[in-house]
Structures are given as C-alpha cells and as structure tokens.
Image (cartoon, rainbow, N blue to C red; front, side, top):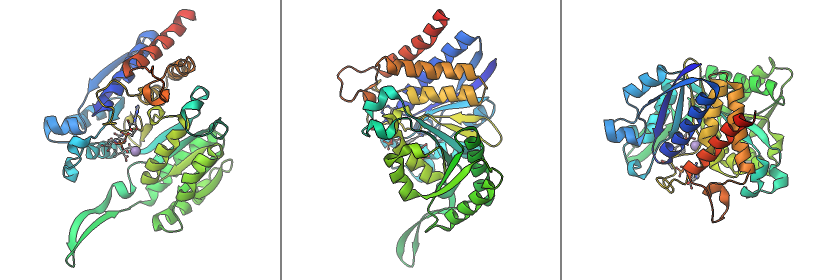
Length: 363
Ligand code: NAD
Ligand code: IPM
Ligand code: MN
C-alpha cells in the first residue's frame, strides 16, 4: 500500500515524540511491505519563527494533499505573550478548521502493567475502557466576537460559545455509531442547568438516540462527570461532549492510564484527511531532554493505520508491541514513579520497534 503522510512535528516535545512515531511507521512499512512517504510541514511556534505565521499556507496544502496527517504538539513560553493571531495554538486551531476535523476521539484504556503508575487505586481503574468524543471545531474556541474592548469606560473581554444544530447532530451521531460497536452506552456531558447551548445539545442527543434503539443514552452534568471519571470510570463507554469540556475531561482521564504521555487521539474530518495527535502538549518543562514518553504519539500512529488506511493487523501489531514493552517493565520517566532507571524517548521507541519486529522473527 502506498500512502502520503504529512508530518507536523510542531514545538517542544512535539518534535521528539513525532520522530518516535515516524520510526515506528517506517518499521511497519518495512515489515508489511508498504510505502509510506513522509512529507514535513511547519506549524506552531516553529512556523512563526520561520515564516511569521503559525500555519503557513504550504502546510495547509501539504495536509490536503496527503492521506493522513501526524501532528506532535505546539506552544511554548517563547510565544506565550504573542498577540492572539500569532500564537502557536492558533496554528493548531486553524488546521482543525481548514481540514474540517470536527470530531476528536480520545480512547482511554487501562494497562494492567501500569496500574502502579496511576495515583488512583487499582480496583478503581481496573478494566476502565472508554472513549471521549470531543467536538473539535465549535464552541468557545471559535465563537465570534472574541477579544478585548472598552465598554462604558470599562476594560471588557468577551469569548463566545456558538454551536449550530448540525454540528451538534453530527458529533452525537458519531458517538452513537461508535457506541453501537462497543458496549452500547453514550454519556452526553453538558452544563444544561446553566447553558442554553447545552440545552440544545441535550435536545439533539435525545433526537439522535431515537435512531439508535440499541444504545442507552444518559445525560451528565460536566461537574459531576469530572468527579465520576475518577470515582468510577468503569461506568463509561462513549462520552460525547463539546470542545472545551472534552479538552479538560480528557487530560483528567489520562490519569487513569498513568500518564498524559499515554493518550493518543484521532481527529476525524468530514471531508478530507484525518489528523492524528497525542492529546498532550509541547511540555516545555521536559522539552529537548529526550525524556518525553513517545507512546501517545506512537498509539496515534497506530490509530492512523487503523482509521485512515484500514490496516487493522498493522495497528494491532503496534499496540501489542507497546503493551509488551510495558509488561516487560520498560518505563519513560513519567511512568517510572521516581525509579532511578528510566528510558529516554529514543530508547523507548527502539524497544517498541524491537518488540514489533521480534514478533515477525518468531512467526
Ligand atoms: P502539556 O501537556 O505540554 O504538559 C503537562 C504536563 O505533562 C507537563 O508536566 C509535561 O512534562 C507532562 N507531559 C506531557 N506530555 C508528556 C509526555 N509525552 N511524556 C512525559 N510527560 C509529558 O501541557 P502544558 O504544560 O499545560 O502546556 C504546554 C504548552 O503546550 C502550552 O503552550 C500549551 O498551549 C501547549 N499545548 C499544546 C497541545 C497540542 O499541541 N495539542 C496540547 C496541550 C497543550
Ligand atoms: C489539545 C490542546 C489544544 C486544545 C490547545 C493547544 C489549543 O490543549 O489539543 O488538547 O485546547 O484543543
Ligand atoms: Mn488539551
């Protein structure tokens, strides 16, 4: 199979973990006889420094001309005081809009070998397995007006939360479709006791649920959901929610797996290539130290193999390799819990690669 993959490493550990994911994709190509062409593009702070723009036009063209996009992370203190249109994060938000990436799937699974790495008790997190379906191109992130102004002599700031009914409908439909193939339960998370947008969200969820009689729908207020996620995560199967709630809840949920560095994501497009990225950021506190956990990025690459290229066997081989190195006790610093000996980003990538290629030697 021949595929064109756009790679946008971005900033900070984004470049380090993306290198790991590309290594693994190359190993997959070698082992299974595929041809993956990797074409690199600029995004984020690095793009601002080199081109004056967080998302250069060439990057958009490159992505649209690719079969899938792999992204690292953007941002860093260097650009934190830039004006809004010149922030690295603006590049990420813009690529999501340009590629119509309306749904961000963030699966959370329990790894038995990592139960010690989570601050939560094993009996709480054991067998947790759910996916957060985060709306990605609407809500507070994109609503207009947004900005500062002086009103009646007072310094004033406004952010606007906008959703069109069709945007709510398509994300909720996706959640139900996923739930049908999983354990048949959708938890729709909102703030319907306060926000009108949440009341429409609830209404649409009820409507959509009529087309999926085999799927149970439950509504949950977001503050309660934040608590339930760590009190009893096993109750969830598919969690669907708006953009900002999904952002916050998924970082929280990563604690179940032991580290933010474990969580991959797939951003699904309504028209073009999908984009795959770890949910974590550029981690300025550890950037440039070869310490970052590459697993979130590597599992994002596995998700690309499955969801964009329908390469199920290859995706499973990557996931199995990750599991087996964890079972063998290999840990990057974030998972090592103070153990003196931990692996670098490059060593962890290498172990995963060896584990994957080793399988072939045996079979
Ligand atoms: P962060 O996700 O970068 O880091 C939070 C904490 O988790 C840090 O202590 C970091 O060291 C740790 N961490 C994250 N990923 C890790 C990994 N793979 N391995 C080991 N440890 C890891 O969040 P932050 O510090 O709040 O934000 C830093 C910058 O990243 C900001 O500029 C923010 O805007 C940006 N950001 C970007 C994205 C993205 O590109 N998708 C996501 C979140 C934050
Ligand atoms: C994420 C990040 C982004 C978001 C930021 C960097 C714009 O936190 O991908 O989760 O909030 O969507
Ligand atoms: Mn986030």
